[in-house]
Image (cartoon, rainbow, N blue to C red):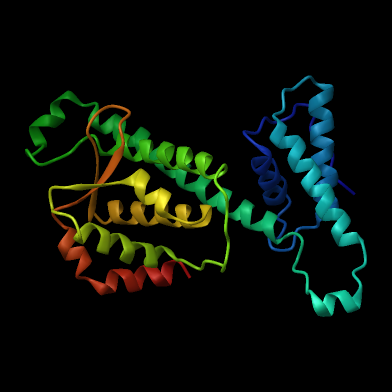
Length: 261
């Protein structure tokens, strides 16, 4: 039975937010989604929203059809002989991958938003300049927030480009950190590398998310500085003065491999 929805409906930015909320509130294993129950609850929300004249984007309707399609695939019996010739994976897997990717990105964005608010409050102190050296860069928090918007723009553009998936990528955050180390070592210390170009070099949305998390780790470890030549301009990655110390420390990468297992 689907759980009743409140008369006052929560508003969600998109269908993935709604699905994640349904899954997390009911403590459902995201790798084993009871698709019939979730589909029923999702459709119930959409119906209630229509009755209350809430505006829903076309994405909500598309996701409803996707859920119904997955549900029908799981209900229909599969021919055993056909299964031998062409084994079919779990029909829910693509949805699970999208939900996990969306959740990682959402958590990172929320973390950056909180960090931005805290650091804005700190940098707003007019007397703070007395404690800054000439090399300090107080604009870092705003640039980090802008990095989220850069990734969002690249992901939107990536939706419209053709996808040619030959093999399944299995890239990790430590792999991306090694990749970024090599890229930054290939340019001069005072030069920066375009974040947009780095994102667009990746062959999948998943790789873009992993690259984003790797950049956050490098910034957190003070190995990379994010720079912006002008307001709303492209964001660049530049080696921090601690970059070589970080790059030479293999223990840091080993630690991150343990954290992201």
